[in-house]
Image (cartoon, rainbow, N blue to C red; front, side):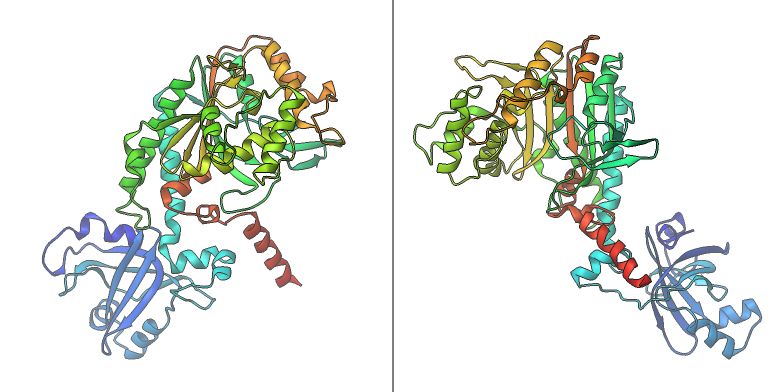
Length: 499
């Protein structure tokens, strides 16, 4: 058994000192430390992924058992193991006079795999840690905590869906055209389609909706997505996403389900703290659910009015709306370039999102910010809003959910409006009305024409979710080998060695 499981096994639950039972066991682990007491007594600390266990090597017991009374053999057997070696030690459960549960060795340790690198119990250089994650985790067991917590959180998430009769599915990673989000895809070529450029998926959304049209009423997927964009403390071009779709689920239901998911995950993180010492106490609000809800347009108007008195969000479907928003961004020293939805996103990220320290729902965004969602006109408003909600915690977005647009006619209009607002004219005064019909996802609209039931959709970036519950501020700390920057660095490192 492993050194860690030996220490926590039933064998240790005996009071007193001395040999606890005569049945021999063999434990294995990496040598973390070795100490000698006099000429005939030594101690080895063996570590495995589950923890650390102590082995006591007594010259008299080992030589009596092995009929090898040679002091030379004892000295050789003791000096052979080095720090970092993987060993197996056979012995009997034993409690030392000091009360430490240990394995009293009956044979000299057996070497399984030697460590040929300089061994250190402290890796402090950030560059060394990022390029040698294995060495960091050997020296600092707490560096493994985010990976173990990640596993536990994913298990909790899957169980939430299984308990509600969802079906887990896998959708394509490679496709002709990437859709389902506003992001730049990675592109590649396949031998089978030498004259065609393929794209890695940026989101599984459109394929999952096709399954919904095919009468699958509760589905979810956990898997990778790829966006050819920058690397920073909360973004990595390769990341893990979860999306689920449920027929006839409306926005209040999606919000309630999300709060239940986060409560379950907070409890998992709380329960993990006994074994994963670096995991912080979760936010009390996350444990209890029921978060504040904020309406997008009134909240944005109120926030911007602190800088521009009497400011109101303009009507967004006209050229005047585009110019007005651009002037607002300029007055507020924001870039103000790109589409209407892009400028609204800039305003939100500057004036709203940083204020959402506690768990907060931002709901009913302008419809142009969510072209795949249902939309409606609120009472006494001429601006169409989406049936959309975003969850923010600590100023960061964690969840996006929608009542999905299920009318092929409305969806076509929204695609056309999206294309209209995404392209600026040469003088940048207003959006251009030039777009090509083939840019609209005709295949998706054709699928919708088979009858798409009212559906609630939900998406969450899981790496960022692990950051939240692990108490980490960099996405690199919750990925086994860090961000793309770290992974490319590993490749360059091995290339340099070959040269």
